[in-house]
Length: 345
Ligand code: HPA
Ligand code: ZN
Image 1 (cartoon, rainbow, N blue to C red):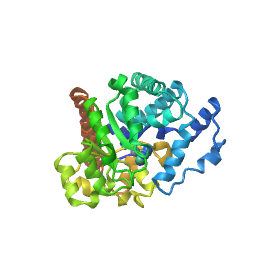
Image 2 (cartoon, helix red, strand yellow; image 1 turned 120 degrees about the vertical axis):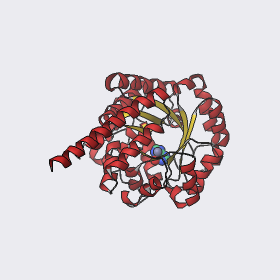
Image 3 (cartoon, protein in one colour; image 1 turned 90 degrees about the horizontal axis):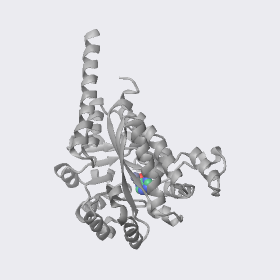
Image 4 (cartoon, rainbow, N blue to C red; image 1 turned 30 degrees about the vertical axis):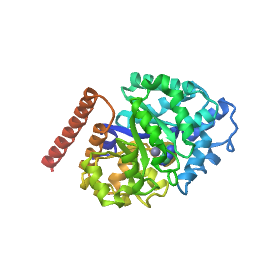
């Protein structure tokens, strides 16, 4: 197996914040282009800010840099940079979070943001054949009324979204706060997901299932602390979108090998892997797969994680079948290659 094997493995990315793909050089370029003052004007000093103690210290930089995004063209360029990179990592389909409340607080309209993102998604599909959809993420440490007014603002173009999510500072902002918001989103026809069990306890995962009726859990690392919850995730077929490099950089776990991924897989939980905020956490999706390989996961486990990601995506049956076929033929090629290597030995 070569290093690039994992970049050719057909997969879906289900946990990716588009603002978290803003690389420091693009942030500086956009700050200049849009005359936005940042405390850092060169790459060397900005790059020194990328050491985080926890989720909040990351969020402080992430929200600060988001201020450089001002026009639809900025959002299109950001999306295109990400999709080109993801396509090179074997991503066939990506479900992409964005944080409209923060952009609206920065004085932008939801249409400026979404028009740019959707334009990038259309061009990305034409250029690289990669499909994508948008998940509106609710920033949980802003007031609940702000979440409701975001849904008001997006109501006229709900067809441009596939789902609603819940992100930002977790501890102290339990899922229960957003039960009505998620009920409303469900009535609007949106799929539901939520970050839970990243820094927060396993009870937040249960709450997201019981009160928000989410179909996937983002992160869910702390689910593993509660054996009955692990059983439930497996029996109800609830996927986890896990992000190993993010969890290490934000000190959720000391090392990739400390993540409970092998035991969750063993228990029958549908684990998937994504990059979260790749410009901040030192790697895109294939780097996350490689980190797991290095931590001891077998190629077969990584292939089933990739298969899970396609199964857990919110695409229609026809697209899912097409992607699963690409995945399965990759697997057959790998197995044939291994057999002929053994034959030659
Ligand atoms: N966790 C919570 N909120 C976020 C994250 C994350 O990893 N990335 C962007 N917003
Ligand atoms: Zn995230």
